[in-house]
Length: 333
Image (cartoon, rainbow, N blue to C red; front, top):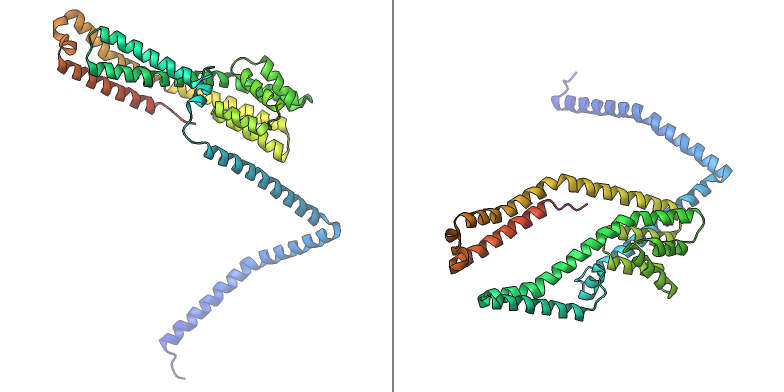
């Protein structure tokens, strides 16, 4: 017999190996495939007999439709919020601070304060550059800082009572009260600023404004994540239905957990705050001690022009360090 070449031997061995692998794969996977096909066949027979397949399909379609409505509502709310992410006007900032004044009155107070402070410094014999800086800081910087301070303080007071107000709505809805009556109870009995904010909603609804628009205005006055959650829950419930008491109960739980988390963050960052306070106070303490012991040595800082430059540079660097440390301990969650 003629000898088989090496190439034919390699081809034959490779073919036999592939066939073996195919057989092993067939032996492993075919029973599962066959069993799955039989199960699908039995399921189709049962569905055809009982009609449960149509009901399951209808339930699935209803769930998909409901999920799509919720997603559309969320997308609509997010689009509105993105459209409103622009520079706030002074009138809106005054409303957020809880002040009952007009922008014109705010500008008048700022101008009067700047003139008074600049006049006092001018009588003390300061240089024109110092007077210009004092006028700009008192007329522009300090009023804006006061607005920011009042806004943060009002938001903190609102968050303290907001979860309790949501619990009032949950208990009222469970007992059978309409949502509007629950909002009216909060408006009458809750302390400032929760009560006045819900009173704005109640009065706006009486004037014919939809609840979604009222909540949108409330979020504009109080740009907080908690208020945003509340508006989203009520908007989705109005459009898609569902158990309002359960949704608001979960929201109240989330708000309380966020408050606990804020407390933990404040406790953990207290060490850094203490360090920043000590570092910020240390230069003034040392300067006061040196002034008491050697007044002629340190008096050059405010009698010599170069000393003024050194004081200004030191103030800038200290302010920069304090702001950096504040940024390090500011957590967003």
